[in-house]
Length: 154
Ligand SMILES: [Cu+2]
Image 1 (cartoon, rainbow, N blue to C red):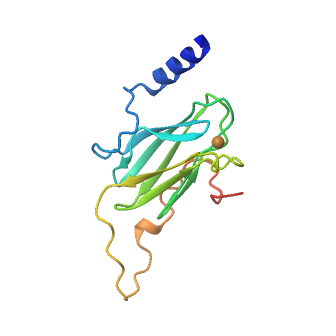
Image 2: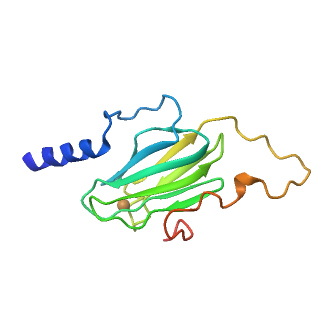
């Protein structure tokens, strides 16, 4: 029990913010943190501001995890992180979209390591029939962190 308390205290200190469990409201943020544990992906905030986003990922669990973030124009991933390790993901979030966050270590998503986060802002209008090539939101602008391979590897 004592060890558990120490681990909890260490995690709380690492977060450097008052715990806000399951807070689904509040203003959108462009920088937030994600904790990986057995077996969940815990976001500190559930609404991101559109534009450049910085995600501080910490493996607060007892086994190796990673984090894959996908959504419209977004495909980034951390390396597999040993317990206690962290990584930072940077990407550009399009307004009005939703991003999926999963751990791609075999079996972990099925165990519950998945979450989604909303990006504030108006949903992009449905594209008219007219063809519009090369909008910025669809580009690879956000791919800067990690050895960004294709997400969703089995
Ligand atoms: Cu995992």
